[in-house]
Image (cartoon, rainbow, N blue to C red; front, side):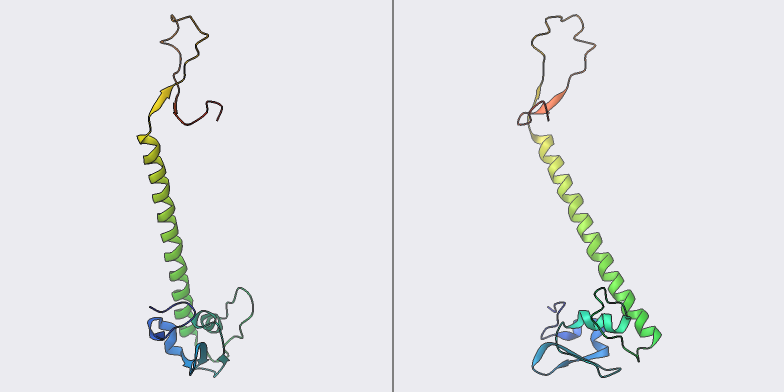
Length: 138
């Protein structure tokens, strides 16, 4: 499986059609459009080279990238970030659901004020339930 920084199977990322791997350097790329040699970083900084959008301003912008290629790679990066964000959100929601399911299964206890001998008003009072391992002041 290809990683972000290149691998033995570089063709899994569509951006590889615009660059070539450097022989003997699994993290190096050569831009097929302008010939820029990037000795490290793999496909991720190469995408910044094509899109002209590098968050760290470490990558030289490709002077020969056509607008349609620039847009194709920009959408590729955007969609990948969107999928990662959605996957994280779904995992977070699942964690919350699991935590809630865990609290629903625990035994609850009623907190009763034992100093109150007045049972006449007992029906009108709110009864609060707490998990057995929770202190009432929490």
